[in-house]
Length: 179
Image (cartoon, rainbow, N blue to C red):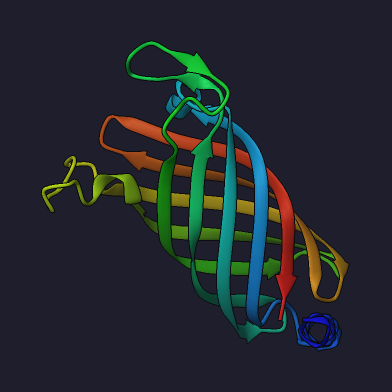
């Protein structure tokens, strides 16, 4: 077990020391933030996990693909009128998007992810059918970031999922780790 822990530490250190140009390559983001929009009636915060692969189009612009998970959690009102911390059933989305990043300065960049977010709560009931007709919606995520190190950035983002007659959105702050 001690050898495995040492190996994991060495691998993590190696990943942080690898250099790449701009944001090109794989990156992983973790964010947390308050809920806005219609979903604020039912939830109080979101947890986001993002996975990106970007290709360098020019010295200052990268384009690629993004996916991840967006989970709306926390104190809120349930459909039965009850409320309380963690009383709401989480709303889970899986975005599939095109990601773009543009360098503004040496340490700052901005980005935009556009695509579709699948509502993971809308699939699979006990009968093997669909729970609802709401399979997801249009996904839009503008962001700005400050590079703390070459492979580590502080990210401020707004995430919006526009479903039929409902908007799930949040403002989040997090970290982006490049590989």
